[in-house]
Image 1 (cartoon, helix red, strand yellow):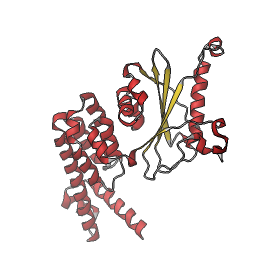
Image 2 (tube, one colour; image 1 turned 90 degrees about the vertical axis):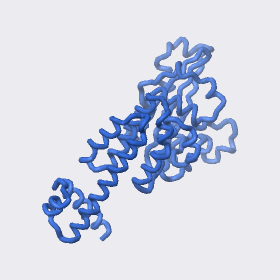
Image 3 (cartoon, rainbow, N blue to C red; image 1 turned 30 degrees about the vertical axis):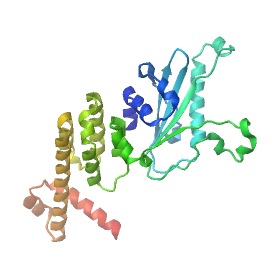
Image 4 (cartoon, helix red, strand yellow; image 1 turned 90 degrees about the horizontal axis):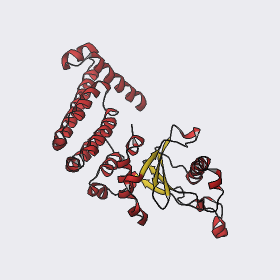
Length: 301
């Protein structure tokens, strides 16, 4: 579960467009006529690193396609303009394949516009060219004869913190949480910062948020704590979201305190059985902390 899950929700995708794309044509978009296309054009070599989502907007005047590439890796891919061209070409090819050939060859036929968007959440600043013409060697010498388009970049870690908070909506809250953190404590600080926003967003958005944050936190807590985390989140009341955050924070602190206590006793030479009995922890939990401590020690040495 991640951004592909999020943006498969039409309301969330439409909110993304309206919140972060500052273009005049955004005002002409209508959520009612937005439709997700169940296809993907990701190249085989990139399946593990990225995902794509495609929406079609049908209007009386024209059809427009939004191609969003989810670039979920830490490094910058400088071939992005070319890869986007490949994906856009494949989408156009698919459209033409499903178009009556007489219509395709007629004077009236026009290719639909594809708006390319790249969502990137890596730590490094995105420095790949945004315009296709900048991917050519000395392309500026040939002016209008050079193929060109420009994709929209949404760089999560470079978004303004205050803007994300002040937007007061689901997608901004998720981007705010997804920015790089120094430690787990910072996650809870951010959750507390947006707690008021979470109380007042639409209920449907809150349910989406709960699924998202559950996925994020489960990966950061020990396996045996996952049931407690899931229960705290799933049983939370939107109007009392601060209680959910407080419960999650207490659960994390308790786990941290247990780990420190186990390490202290290990350094004193206590056995797993002795530690388990003294701290009232399952032996499996003590062994897990012991192995983690030994792994950290070996890396330092």
